[in-house]
Length: 445
Image (cartoon, rainbow, N blue to C red):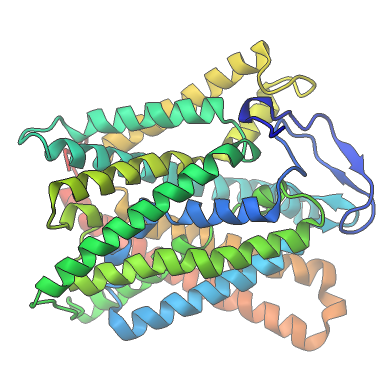
C-alpha cells in the first residue's frame, strides 16, 4: 500500500547505515525523512519545481538585456556549467564515512564553523527571498484572475495574504520533501497545462505582433549592468543552492541517483523553462513583461486558466525551496523520537510555520517588487553555492589526488565564478538603488 504524506516518519537520532555509496556511514539527526525516494521522484520534483510561473516569467530578466545571440549563448553556457557544478556536488554527499544531508554541515565539516554559518546565511537568504517571490507570484496570479471579472479588483496585498495562507497550510500538512510524492502528479499536470496554454497564446500574440523590437536599449553602462543582471537571473533558473538537502531524500546509491535526477532536470526541465522564456521574448521582444500572463491578449478563459494553474502549481513548487528552513526549525523544535504528526510536533510545527510565513507575507506585502531582488540573490548567494564551494571542497579533500591540471581547473572555476559573482552583485545593487526612487511601501502593483 502506497504511503501517505501524513505517515512519513521522522529520521530520529544520528545513526549509522550499512552499505551504500562508500560502505557504512553516519547521518546527522533530522526531523525529516531520508533514504526514502527514487531518482524518478526527485527528478520530477526538480522538473516541476523549476518549471513554475515564477521562473517561466523571466523573459524580461534573461533575454531582453542580452538579445538573441548573447541570450542563447548564456542560456546554454550557464545551464551546462550549473549541471556540471551540481554533478560535482552530488559526488560529495559522503565524505570520510559521513553522509551530509545539509550543505552547511558539509562546509562546516571541511572548513570549520565560519564556513558553516556563511553557508547557512547564503542558503537561507536565498530561500527566504525565493519564498517571498513565490508569494508575490501567487498574489499577482490571483489578482489577474480577479481583474478578469471586475474593473476594481482588491489591492494586491489581500491576494498576497491569501497566497501566504495557502502556502502555510500546504507546508503544515505536507511537511517534508518526501511527503510531496503524492502531489507530484498533480503538479506535473498543472505544469503541462500552464506551459501549453501559455505557449499557445504566446505564439498567437507573436504572429500578430508585427512590430517586435529586439534591440538592447540604454546607455553603454546600462547595457553592461543589465547584461550582468541577466546572467544572475539565468543562474536562478538553473540551480537552487540546496542540492545536498534534496539528495538526502534519495535511496542508495544516492550519488548515482542524484546525478540521474539532475540529468532529467537539465534536459526535460530546461527545455520547458527555457522554451517558454524564449517564446515570450520572441512574442513581445524588448517589451516583455516581468509576469508574462499579464501581457497576454486573451481570451478571458485562457487568462483565467493560465493564472489559475500558475497559482495552484506554485503551491507545490514553492515548498521545495522552503523545506530546508522548515527542516532546520523542525529538527530544533520537535521531538525526533515521535512522528511528524504527533500532537506535540504538530503544535510546534504550527508555531514555526506560522512565524515564517507571517514574516514572509508581511515583507512581501511591504515590498511588492521582488523582481529586482532576483538578480541580487542569484549573484550574491547562488554563484558561491553553485560554483565556488564544490571546487573549494574538492581542492581541500582531493587536491593532491587530482594532480596539477585538476587543481588549476578548480582554481579557475573559483576565480572566474568569484569575479562574475562580484560583477553581477554590483549590477544588482545598482539596479535596486536606481529604482529606489519609484519604490512605495505597500504598493498596489
